[in-house]
Length: 385
Ligand code: 0PR
Image (tube, rainbow, N blue to C red; front, side, top):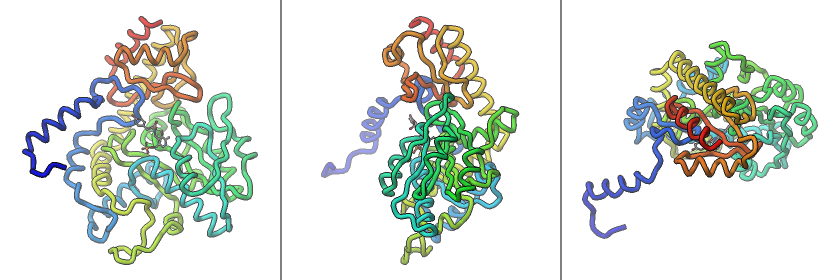
């Protein structure tokens, strides 16, 4: 730090220069991000709530009420009348809370001390962090030939140490939805906690189903589902950081509660102590502002772009890994190595993401990627071919 204060304008100029090194969503070149530019109204509201702290909710009763309302609204989207949970920093923290709840619940009611969690090979790496922090062993369930969790493999993976089963509604790499209904049944019959990671799909699957898309049910209407991750900062158009964790019952929060004696509320279940109220307020605002109609239109539009892009790829001779269920397309050149293709695209200014399972170029068709960008991308892919 400098000894003397520096003029505001000088600081702003310096920051502006550094900010120029960042990529801008508006360029339409960021192909592998599940985040996008937040809605301007959500940003406006976010700034108004920057000083609120949900770590001490008794001081911020209004903002705490807003968080509860947001959790209820998301719960309602997921077929849950009374929802419990929190707006957190993202999918990682939401998944960590879910696994912590499952572990503590199993410890309390089943006496399991060295637990295991069953996750699909396609699970986001946040579960590896959760297992590491919570001292749990990961048991990976295999994927079937369609890259979805293999139900038989889940059955075979269950042991008397299993504290949770995880399935994904909108996988990170391919945007696929696991057979949640079957897994829910298995979890329920075996009295095992079942968590659904819908960090990406949670803000689109309900709307697409309403619109008649043939997508499987993944929510609390299935009796085995104990918790769901849904991230407002992905398809919800809220500013970063905004993740959502929704629990079926309050008990799951209670098994994580620690005493917080000198605060206005005497126990705390979240991982983070001091935490933003701005994320809840911005999510509340954007959900009200867009309504189901707004989100339906966005989801429908993005699926239209997805179809346009995947059909365009096929016409050029590229091979898509699977028919997209959500707004992610993964593809390869029939003969060229994926990393070589990725490099060629990078050289043309595209910010490319390469999936690992299977190895493929992966494009997440978020709001910032418009039709004209897709046309330019297809044009470049034509030249490369
Ligand atoms: N669950 C799923 C299914 C996810 O896809 C992700 C993140 C998470 C959980 C974790 O969420 P947070 O990153 O909010 O903690 N999926 C993307 C990924 O890691 C996130 C992302 C976003 C990556 C923007 C790149 C990027 O530019 O691939």
